[in-house]
Length: 222
Image (cartoon, rainbow, N blue to C red; front, side, top):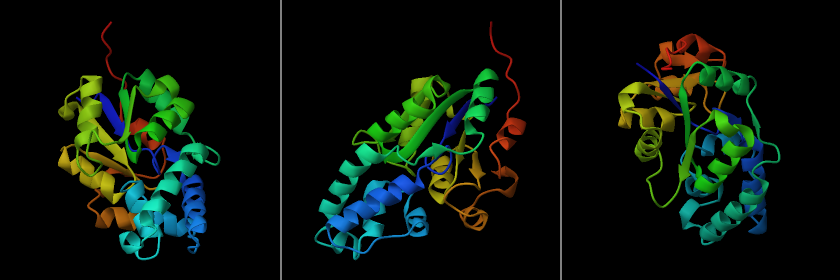
């Protein structure tokens, strides 16, 4: 029986794209590199901030200023990660209902761990019991390590959990656990991209409210 839902963060629960783009472009501007559009940054996210800046800066890691750009991005984003970010419409109501129905909820993300925990605290409070981001302690997604850590913190078996995300990275992460993956179409990847990455059409949703039809009320122990 499914009793736990593991969520991706960026593009699934929170629309973080504008703050990410602002920090990318701030870092690029400091090094006199051309800026990137929202659509470009949307296509770059999903594999952690190091890969984000590698994709954003000309010549990637071959650029002699890559490490400085990454450092500047991290410093800027740590301060400005919550200026334009907001939950997707109806996400908070859906999380409240899932919690009321008895589900344990967690976040796993390739955003750095301090930002994940801060954003979880700001937006979701007690709705989500554990939030895990990128750190030196665990391999980032699509490795399953952050999912395993979340399951351990919640004292749940993978057989009783399902993953919800918006990208090819999320699909690969779920396969590596393994566990089923619900793919959302309101995030950073198109339905076509999700299907090409292996999403099941029967497990693709276009609205947060569709989650409620997938998860019945649990018979909670008194």
